[in-house]
Image 1 (cartoon, one colour):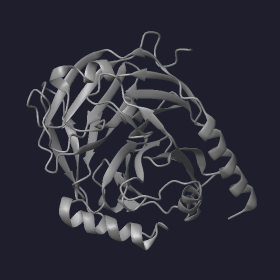
Image 2 (image 1 turned 120 degrees about the vertical axis):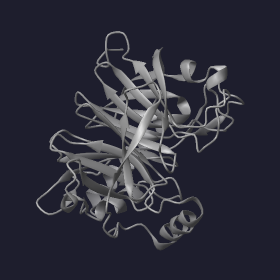
Image 3 (image 1 turned 180 degrees about the horizontal axis):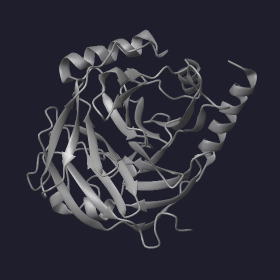
Image 4 (image 1 turned 120 degrees about the horizontal axis):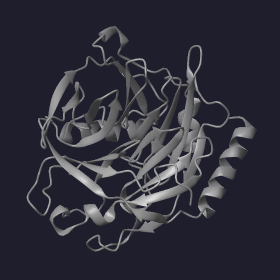
Length: 334
């Protein structure tokens, strides 16, 4: 690895360790909630708004994704089959890959789809956590378009050198693609969490300068309303790109944060704790369960991966919450 890249990683890590997380400026207001029927594997783990259609993936299904029929309060997941080619080598070590493979025999989902996004040319992009790889699918049903992106192996090496992608089940948890389809941001989940950017070249997706925009360790205390709140690892659960800004879903903090798309510096955060931690909406699980995010002009969609566990009111299906945009919009200044 080039000396300059190593120095850049060390500087980013030092800055992240001392950075101050912006406190949420306001609570988001819940507009509606929608249980989702028809996901074979349950475990809703990503959302993408492509035109007027809302798409989702499950981390337990390798051969299909879903388009959501939103014509009623309870949404219907309509399956969209995909023929996935063999996964290319990404540079993850054998030990990490073997643990993931073993886990797939128990829980299902060798590919472990954890995030989804789309461009303006009919391309849908899905990140595989277990393989640190990105699959591109055609929304027009063209199977020849379905392929894994050729990503320069230096991306994974740089991420691991910065302290990310070191632990089982703590790899890439979300992604966002720009409308032109030539830049992707990836979110590493936790221990350390971070943000990575790659751009499409002539033959490979590669880094334009340092791959790592942010590498951050540390803990934060769960919201007061959370049952038995405690300090847990900072994490990212998903990403959304809107109006040139990155929005991170910060699951255990129960917040959405706006970040600079070039530096990943946090600018403003909004909490959704009050609305999702009402007594009837609580889950008897020790961590936040928000896994999917889409931000648009009118608000935000937040999807829950409840691992088949029921809410206090008995709802066992995945749920998607709709929040109104904050007063002043997502571009509001502190």
